[in-house]
Image (cartoon, rainbow, N blue to C red; front, top):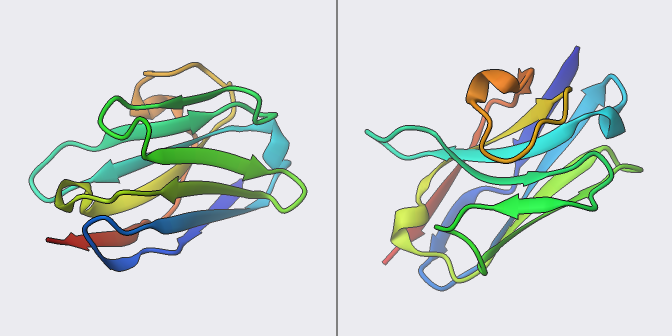
Length: 125
C-alpha cells in the first residue's frame, strides 16, 4: 500500500507560479513511476506529466509543455510539479498517482495503482 498526499495548491493570478508536492509513504517510493493528473469541472481527467522511477525520464503533455516540470526526490519520497506561466485553463484539481509497473507515457488511468486525494489549483484572469 502507498499513501499519497498532495499539497501546494491554491489561488494564483494568471502568469504566476505554483509548485505542487506529493508525499508518499508506505512501500518503496523509488519502485514507482509517478504521474500528475488534473481534472477541471465538466472535463475528463488529463495526464499532464509523468516521471520514471529514477527521475531520468520525464514526459509532459503538449498542453503544459514548456510551462510545467515534473521532478522527484527519492530520498524524500516526494514528487513535484513546478508550474509556471499559469493560465486560467490550468484551473483544476491536481492528483498524483503511482504506477508500480512503470509503464510509459499515455497509459490509461487504470495503469496507476495508487492515487492521492487531490489539491485544487485556481488561476484567476
